[in-house]
Image (cartoon, rainbow, N blue to C red; front, side):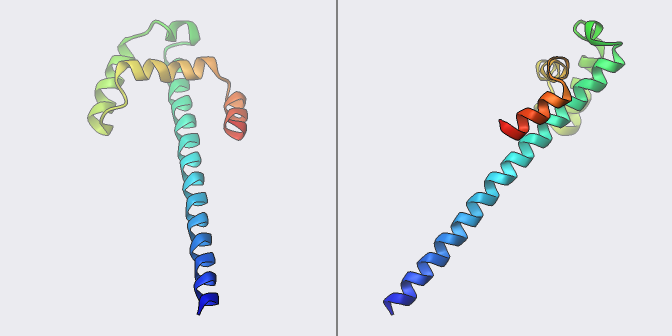
Length: 104
């Protein structure tokens, strides 16, 4: 009977390990996906506003996006966050993000 209990414990612990490992992978995948989503949103805003220099000062699009995205998706897209998203695109190349997500 003791051997059966010990082997059940091994199986239970291995199942728990698999679950925990999978949860970490999901979190990493979600974070990476969000980072690239924000980078691409920032890229689109910068391109629409005519480049990096103009994007730093253009506020009309940011205001409109903030209203529309907040209505559609809830919090997280206020003007401040949208400016942070623009800055992610301005300050990081796509290659830098790939390196960061692979090693960060």
